[in-house]
Image 1: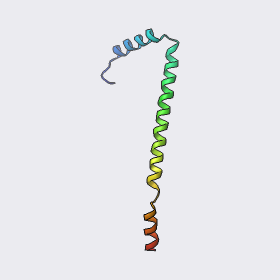
Image 2: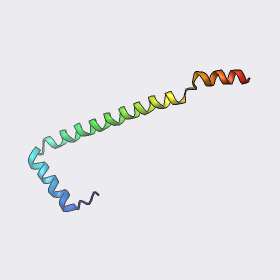
Image 3: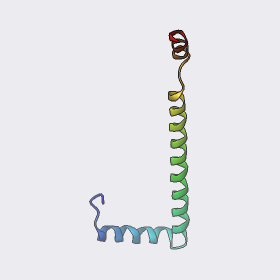
Length: 69
C-alpha cells in the first residue's frame, strides 16, 4: 500500500493521535467521509448531466429521420 509498511502506519497513527487527541479523531474521520461522499455525488451528477445531453438526439438528426421516412 503506497510502499508504507505496518511500522510506518503505526508511527503515523501515533503522531496523529498525539496531535489531535483520541476524542477528535472520529470527528475528523466523519468530516473526511462526508467530504468524500459529497465530492463523489457532485461528480456523479455532473457525469449524469453530460450523459443526458449526449443521449438526446439533436434537431438536425430528427429532421433527417423525418425526411427519409
